[in-house]
Image (cartoon, one colour):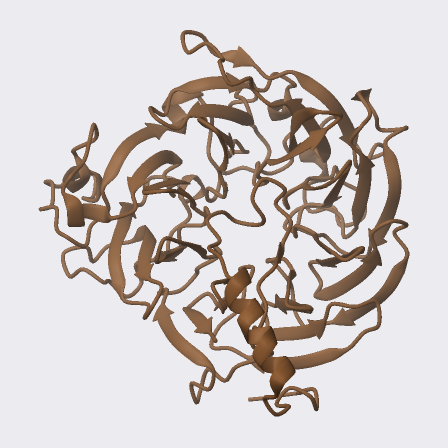
Length: 504
């Protein structure tokens, strides 16, 4: 165990601290979607958060919950519940003793299980649904409804209360859904999920999945905006469904597909589509920003409130910005495993801050070049803005799959080789970097004047969220960290691949 604490971390409680505690309570709130609502910024207004914690002694650990292993998703907190993806390495239900992706719904107060959605593997080809991986898609919660994408690339609407208030419909076949293919339906119990409706993306939009689904649904009014997860096949050389849409809009009430992109991203996929959309308002118009699997950041006009339900609409492109315009555009399979030259991809989410969009792009972590950029884009422009829309560009010496955290004029972003970067949000000037000791698959998270970030070497770090580098603490967890931390209602949530910690 290694702690590296700031001398002021345990200052005596005085009148000022008491006032700050009151403010923390006043500003405490749920976190019902991954990142800030709409903008996707990895920041929070929560205050009074812990600098660090000790998972071995339990110091500052309110509770912890096992995730099994291979958990990559980040937690979402809403209406007294904590929802997070897990696997079934250590079954919570003796009847379900096979490999499943699992969505856990836990009590916010003590981490006890309320219910789980267990989804058996697709089977046949590991690249369609990677064995033993946790359910990766972060849920989105509104009221008593949960929207997410399962490991079988099914979009589901769930009842936040699970089966505790009965089996609501129209979907009623939960017992068969959680059984292995060819096996009889299981009895539905009080700790099982309640599926309201379900839509298979493979059937609805004729896409072809790869590895695992990672889609955090953006909810705006009655509309669900989401990535379809289209990708290459097991050869990594062929996109079997190049004409499938990459970004779609669904009706939150029925799951019907209302709109889709028509910009041909599927023909330019390097690996798979794993980014999620964000929303901003520019020149009085709502725009949906989306990071393409082809290294291009797109902005589409948001759907009007009264879009027709009888035909699938085509999303209107407002602008596009190629983050790597000199990269190869044809014969993308020829660049597999080329660490010096390759097409670029976008896997983190674009972040809307006013009239600007911040996004990371670069070589694919598994197959592409070891180079990436943090880009700042002028979102007020229209058309192909590759040559006119760049406000600044900051180069990083490795791939990057992170979503930026923009706070108080600073941008914090982690790269794939394990460096945390602090950059000026207006100019792109670099203030500092720090080697956090291992690959970073999650994103930096800013709250309470601090930056929290974890690495695949099991270290969880805390820095001051300032342009002057100040390391506050580091602590070693039980397993690699692949998720992004989050704060809600005065509690910091930190997930390793094995365990979720609620820190207070």
